[in-house]
Amino acid sequence: MNRPAPDLTAPRRLARGGVGLAVHALPAGQIRDRYRQELLADMYGMSRHTQIAYTLGVLTHIWALRAAVVADAPAISEVTMSRRPFTCRTNLHHVWRWQTADDGSRYRRCARCGKDHSGISKGDPNSLGGAFG
Image (cartoon, rainbow, N blue to C red; front, side, top):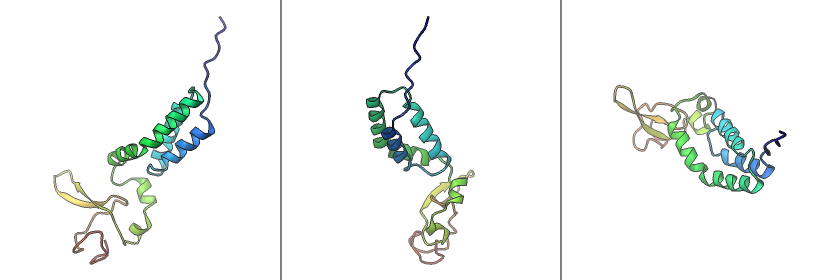
């Protein structure tokens, strides 16, 4: 019995480009690489038209995926610490978010770089007043 091998067509250039463009919305590093590989692997064996439809679906839903990935990610990661935004490195601007410690106490931490808020600055915690973030 000679059965033909299943049609395992690789994702076409347009589909690969669309997925590559979409995953740029995800955090850089291992997360982005993993999702790019998974999304491309899903397209193997699809027809050209199905690959395009799948790519359009990925492009239209990438912000929902980003929200889920960012909400599930720990506040401090190796990627965040190695690629801190310029304004965080220079203490010009942080994006403060409330966090809850294991003991139930609350504190503020920068969502971009992971720095804990000292509580010294007065007024808007994102402003330059007082302790510069």
